Amino acid sequence: MIEPPEVTLTDSPRVKCNGSSQIRAGAALGHPRVWLEIDEHGYVDCGYCDRRFVLKGGPADGADQSSLPDIASGAS
Image (cartoon, one colour):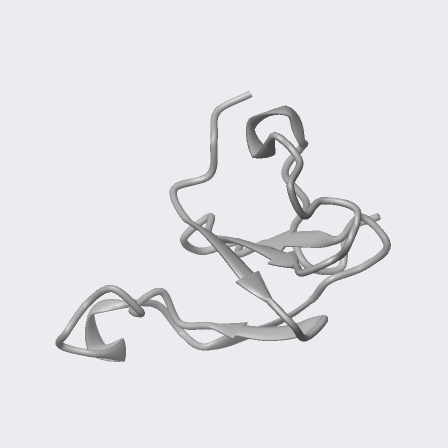
């Protein structure tokens, strides 16, 4: 498995992504804002930019991210 481009730790199981957190010009250079829900796996991947959101203290926190499969929002 290939590591995701960016891993973001979060305290909330519901997160938003617009692909532009590292771009100073803002959302105009990112992608449409999407809301993602972290499930029992403890992480979710954005379907647009592949950013991975990991729930702090969840089962994926501290795990080798390259060994975990891609999980898009709504997948089981």
